[in-house]
Amino acid sequence: RMGKSECHFINGTEKVRFLDRHFYNREELVRYDSDVGRHVGLTPYGEKVARNWNSNPAILEDARNAVDTFCRHNYEVSTPFLVERR
Image 1 (cartoon, one colour):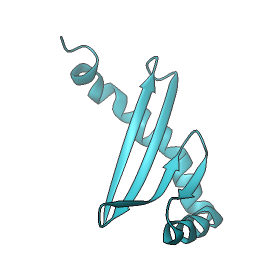
Image 2 (cartoon, helix red, strand yellow):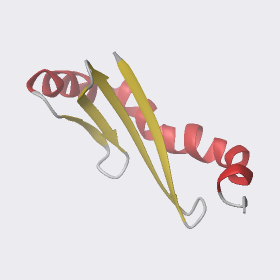
Image 3 (tube, helix red, strand yellow):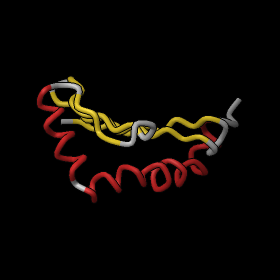
């Protein structure tokens, strides 16, 4: 099992997209996309997991807050290495 979280910054922190992807055996099962606002299952098992996670308000709230707590919070740390590097 593996998870991968990504932040995509458009025009600084004005527009931020957060992706949280979950894999098993190199196959992506479930994905949370902040533009969609909910978990999406990509396999039959992933659909069951996404349905379960979307029905849990605490899990959904954590995922929705990740744009601020994970992406924007770490933007200041990662900016010198990603944007200003020449």
